[in-house]
Length: 263
Image 1 (tube, rainbow, N blue to C red):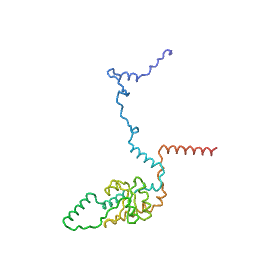
Image 2: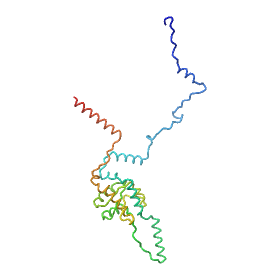
Image 3: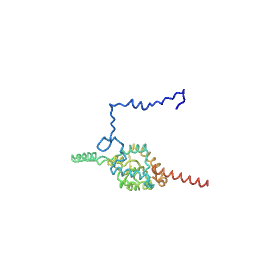
Image 4: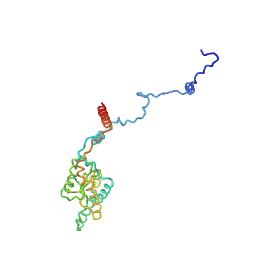
C-alpha cells in the first residue's frame, strides 16, 4: 500500500492497443492469399537458375569456363591475342576493295562474253583481277611459295588444328601475318559463311601505301614477338569460390608460421 498523502502514478498510456482498436473496421474482411496447389496464382520470380537450357547453350558455356580454367599451351593461346579495333578496321577496309566477284557478277560477265561471241565479236580475256585469296590449302601454298604479302587468320576456328600451324609457317617463311576476330567476318569478305584465313597477294597501285602500313603493324605486333608468344601460356583463371578458398588456406598457413616463430 502507498503511504498516506501521496498520489499513485497513473498507468502508462497504451497507445498501440488504442490505435489498433481505432483502425480496425468490421466492414473490411481480411483475406490472406493461399498459394497451395489449385488456389491463388504464385507471384512471378526470377527462375533463371532453374531453367533447363538447350544442350548447345550448356556446351558453349561449359567450353568458355573450361578455356578460362585449364592451362592453355602457347601454340593455342596465341589466338587470344588479336589485332586491335583500329588495325582491324583499316585491314577490312582494304580487304573490301579486293573482294572476289559474287556468283551473280560472274554469271553476268560470262553471259555478256557468250553473247558477244555468238554475235561474232572478239572477246578479250582482260587482265588478271586483283583479288584476295582464300581457302586454307591455297593460303598455305601461297605462304610456302612466299607469294603472300599479308596473311589474315581468324581467331575462332574450330577445330583449331586447321590453322594452328599457320603463324609458325608465316614466321619461318618471313610472311607478315595478323590474327583478327571473327571467321564469320572474314567470310563476308569472300561471300562465304566463314573463312579460316585470307591472303593478300597483290593490291591496286593506289592501295600500296595502305598495305605497307598494315604490313609494318603486323610485323611489329606478331612476327617480331615470336619469343614472347612462344613462352606465354594462357588460362589458369579460377572462379571466385576457388580464389576465396585459396586465400583462406594461405592465411591459415601464414598464421601457423607466425605462431610457430613466436613459440
